[in-house]
Image 1: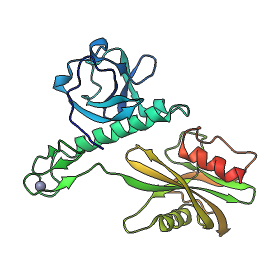
Image 2: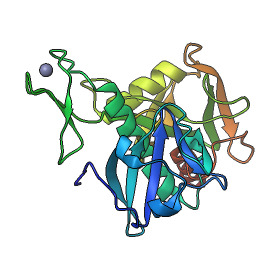
Image 3: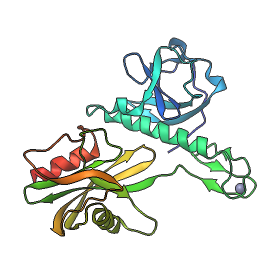
Image 4: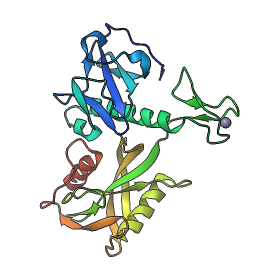
Length: 265
Ligand SMILES: [Zn+2]
């Protein structure tokens, strides 16, 4: 992908992903601003870093690196990214996630991790480069496994410490350095739930920008072991009858899609 540091024209209809820390600027209707700069209540973008990050419906998407809760942008408010999570329009949510990840990357790579010199952005790809020692950094992507595990007519669900009250989901965890996906999956499931699984099947992936994960989705079946929920990572967890599940993640999330696949088998 050609990623360019852009100076958009005033009359170009485009998507504007204005990012400030973990938040994104949404119109009062809760949408990502779309339109021409000369019709939007935005400040002069010459004072901001603007980066071309892709296209939606043949219109360019721009990331604008705003200041913390920047008050110069009018006609809306900064809101958490999750407000864009809508099953009927994942394209916008995923582009917003990309914008957020790039913004986070640029903000955390101002200085070289090897020699400490100030880094420069690369014009033709999304990277930061150190001209002192030639170290180059790219946005971090952290692979994560997520797995829906069934045992007969039951599904394993757990409440994570960061989940909102009452919400149950399937097990997930980061891949460690040197592991393949299957090893990571077996280790995570054993660590978090004390069980062994079999018939591991890969289904799909989804970028998840909280903060820079790439979720890789599997289903698996219980093989052996008694459930033992790890209290360090999870609040509670259990086998639930597939026709009587508690509150689970909404449509559009990979967790929900995997649950739907697992219980329809
Ligand atoms: Zn360096």
